[in-house]
Image 1: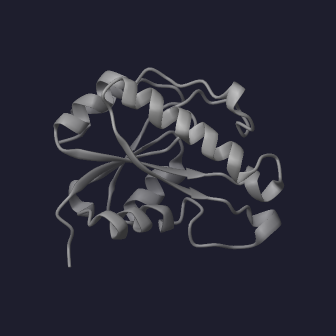
Image 2: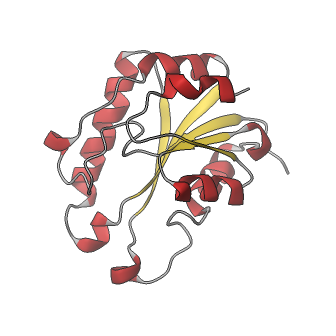
Length: 163
């Protein structure tokens, strides 16, 4: 059965926080970008906000789930301070060189499909904003419209692409 909610899925690095060129391994290096007003507008338009992020650094042992949890908590709290609710985080902890193949690492659609199933989301009304081609591919594979931005590009610049 099709869902009734609409959502904007967001990649993390380069979209919600500054792209570091490699994994963000500790919370001190986690710099949140100011997309507060843009995401507030989407929320006010009825979109649920969900994060979908590859976190292969977990498989590489560069950081652990606790540290990742701190980064996501910081992101959630900082946005909450601006009246924006990030409903959930979906992340792929795998890396093909360390853990073999999985169905959640983008460009595969697994992370989006998890969110769609958990929250009863209607893919055809939903979007995925990311700064990599793999984000768009994952979105389209899940039936969600992908919007490609440059790393650290303000989300406000693509609001006109969202119904």
